[in-house]
Length: 523
Ligand code: BG6
Image (tube, rainbow, N blue to C red):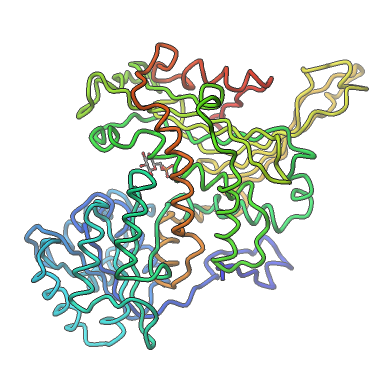
């Protein structure tokens, strides 16, 4: 079941709603992190576990074991992690006593991922924890390259640390980071490799967007509010825009990005996940399988893009040198570890149609890019115009269409835009907004996505993780686009200067249907 709990007192006094009161029950367990020296561990995983601990959401007892190649002691690893906490914690300043209490549960296991002996050492270390639950309830977090996933699970199984399927009262689960493969074929192979050693129910594929509060709120907004769900279909919706923009370039990640590009890095996962939550049918229940069944159904209903549609429905772009926030930025081809003739896309815009009863004929525009004017993620649902009589007849296209914007980040919130009369003796209209802001409503409760995801994985709750068929269906969609681009160098119309909202071609994509992008605003 999704972790939804509405306390009675919330109903009586909505202002008293405090997410801290919602607790999951999590068995005592050990979290083993492969890739313990990596950035993800340092910046995200350890800070997330630390916050869960400070908020008394970690089970008691628990242990964290970092597994990596470099020689380190428990103490030297803890000292490094402490620096990470000071730099990346969402709560400043870090409480020294809390950190010390947390760090006492954190250990290091030195080993090479390909060395069977190292897994014996890990097993010996786990046995040293005494409590059987710490030895046998194990969450293996693979913060490593996907090419190493299969070897790690095979070694874990050999060392009898990982057992396939349901066992007595203990559990072992494997959390895997994106990218989950490079394309459909490699994702299928990876799935096949993992499934030799674990059941699908033991695999937790991460898409950190699903850990974001506002992304989870999409389903709550849609399915707990009668007023909006009534409007959520082709009868009322003109089109939908999903924007995930970033105001940074690829920075030091040029090597990875050359392999991924925006299509694999963002569209295959985050954007298609947001789309499926925005457009899916109501699930039969809040059980993980019901929710994920509906998401897969939605992805399968996306009208396949035929080669003839590509030029009309798909736009790619790459940033040139430019300026963002007053800073000059190099062009993508000048970034470290990037081929100076690279054709890799740093921007993608798509026009997708969903062939089902609810959405037939409604365009869904998706876009993402690096080095755009600002970092913001939002979903804008634009409603059909009013009939062309009365004010609409007078104002024509100047009459603003109603819209609901779900602002996923930053300044998380939801706005409803509609027309109002400007007070005065003449009949003048302008759009006005009703706005719900998370901050003003709920205060500064902004847990990091990884906190929620780690907690869910420890609790064995799979709703916020990607199922095998979901990941494979998403690859099918992006593979067709990738194939079309192969061997086609970027043309002049596909470049955009850093600091612009993408290439000109992305405006044409919408203009063809009389639409235009509504860019996120700095608020
Ligand atoms: C990651 C991508 O998955 O998501 C990055 O690999 C991107 O390229 C990041 O910057 C965006 O995440 P967020 O949470 O900052 O929107």
